Length: 356
Image 1: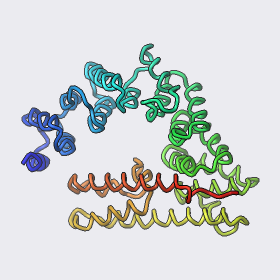
Image 2: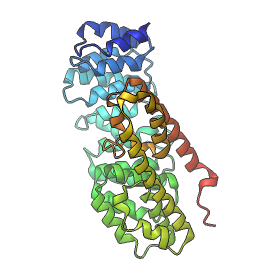
Image 3: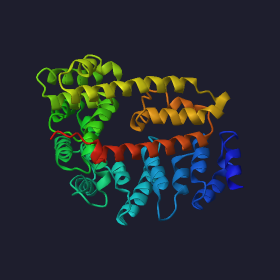
Image 4: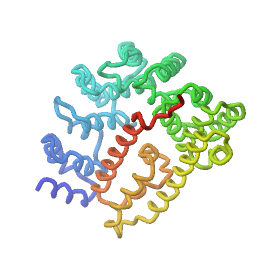
């Protein structure tokens, strides 16, 4: 009954003031939290204060933390609400929950105590409870100490096997031009596919195509076969237009079999993106029954990290503009499952390059 009521509210007018108290009660039961947020998203009179009121007093789950992050990121959030959000976040962080990234997003580096917390999170050793959010801490630290944050990120990339794959994006956010050169240089130092994938996706999401193209073009002429293979692998995550000058040459003209195999695999990735884009264009709200299979096909064809990009190179986000929220939930689950399979495959011994 509660779910049916929420779905009905989703079709009502955008002014929801009379329903906020009931929505808060429903959210705090822990049931149908996502539909409540979906309804709130359509309310023109929903303020950051309303979102803060949804939150429980303790025992935050991931969705609660997402609400905190959303409220904290809104330009119109009043300072009084921002302080309240900080209190919520520091409360969860003090109990060792997975909240540090949300803490770091709300921290003001100009406040000494908060800056100290950023340093603590940025320099956290592997295995700390907030370890998974070190990337966010380093990004925030860059606002106060640009060069130190960059060096911490670069050192983490090279020496932290658990968090290294988060660092390419962090480096590019801190200094895109310098990071592009450094990351291209690092391609010759690693054969870790998870790191190489992270570099490719970071270039696609945060890099400048012209700088990436120039940097790779400069290292290729005298590159070893291992570096050429790394470039071929990374190219599969870049746009087709950014790699056209070298990828086909590596795929069909390189003298090393391992390089040609990887380059041809990257070309197939580009071909799958083209196919996925055509499928996305074919989906319409009037034939929503076909959308289930279309979404599943697109997620199977394209890396979820590319599908999640704001630039939406495949046109994936546009599919959901006129579809019910259940399709978004289905897509999120499909992407989550696929991402786990990709990570597992990259970790697999059988998927490692045997250069012995």
